[in-house]
Length: 116
Length: 139
Image 1 (cartoon, each protein chain N blue to C red):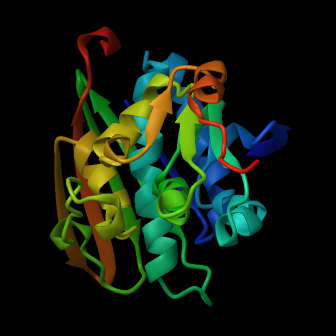
Image 2: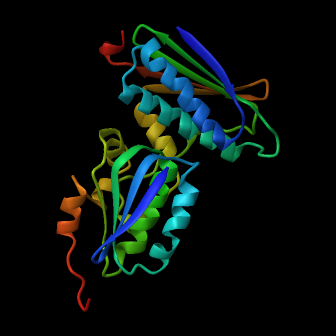
Image 3: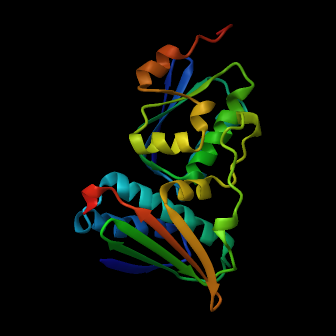
């Protein structure tokens, strides 16, 4: 899996491409480590080019959602392909993760952060 | 129609799995969605076997897929520690985020994308047989 990390104002975007499985999940988790320890921007996973996710990938997404639950910064997901979205829904993740249709929708939905 | 292949007890073999399944797209008229579902089922079970098995030994995993009309049968055989995924407790997907745990999601996905499954232990091998009904376009 390839990850492209970009920043847009107060939001960090992880654009994922390829396959998020038990092979790629450990590296992805490592890339996220600093964001999960001390969130300091909003975070969006852009799934537009992600073809496949397994439970190993869901585990990383769950840990990310937990890390962002309490703070003032938000975690959103967007642009999922049909199969990936189905896996999210079966797992019940759509009940606690906001999923937008596109990265633009995510960016306009994320609020400005007070004091920034 | 039937294919069999053997993979090593190694996560890098998930790519072999995908290569094998992609050859079926044309051969068995499977859609990309069918392939993705079958891939997920095998990925979760193979990843589990590699995680539960004896990692020091290069224990091979034998996979057979059989398609008869619109019934797909998947058989996975390994000689690792006894492990019956059919009796694993499934996670409660209605719990709020703070109570959700990671465990069991893989098995939940397998259960969702297959129509039946059966585990037996025989000759020191785990034998898991899954059945999946295919949509009528796959005829």
